[in-house]
Picture 1 (cartoon, rainbow, N blue to C red):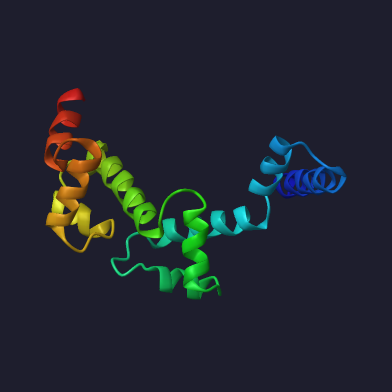
Picture 2 (picture 1 turned 90 degrees about the horizontal axis):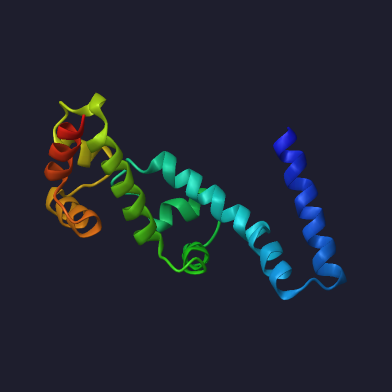
Length: 147
C-alpha cells in the first residue's frame, strides 16, 4: 500500500508539472512514468513469468493484455529494442544465472536451455556465444573453477 500511495503522489506531481508547463527534462521524465510506461512494465513482468514457454510470442502477450500486437511492438520500439530482442536477452540472462549457480552444477546445459525457453539448442549456443563471448559450457567451467 505505501508503494501504491507513493506512485499516486508521483503521478499527480507529474500531471501538475505537465499542466503548468514543465521544463523539457521534467516533461520527459513525467511521460516516462505515465500509463504507457506502466503498461510496458506489466508486459515485461508477464514475459518474465512466461519466459520458459518456447512459443512465447508478440501475439500471445498482446492477446493476454488485450492490445494489438503492433501496439505492443511499438512499446518496445520506444525503448530502442524489439519484443524478440527483449525476450532473447531475458532468456540469455536467465541461462547465465543458471550456469553460474552452484545449485544447478549437475544439470545439463541442454536441459537448462530448454527450461529457459529455447527450443533450438544450436540457436541457444550461438546467441549465448554472441552475447557473452564464450560457449555456455565455457562459462560453467569458469564458474566452477572460481568456486
